Length: 133
Image (cartoon, rainbow, N blue to C red; front, side, top):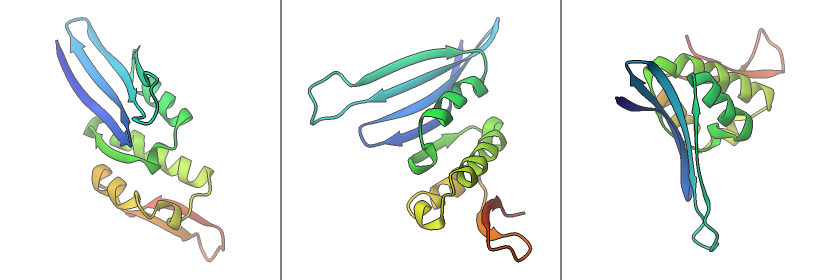
């Protein structure tokens, strides 16, 4: 059985990752969320769930968290285009500005091997995010 981490974001006190586990029967994706607060004596979060595909696991993250504002550590090449598509959709859907991305834009670009552009289309005052060609 082979297990590879294919997506990982880190934050203060924890992280979220998706691992791909492959064996003779096929593959499954394991969502793992680990979080703890040293100022709180509770047990924190330690959650694991299995999914049949990467998309199911990632949609859980995309729907729950502003993951693009956290420290993106890793995205496997097999899933970069999928992640980029959802990144652009979230940035434009939530009207995120460059100042909102001051601390994370460079890291997103490095990990995803892209260049994010924020500009108006054809003289429009409405600006949107897109990927440089």
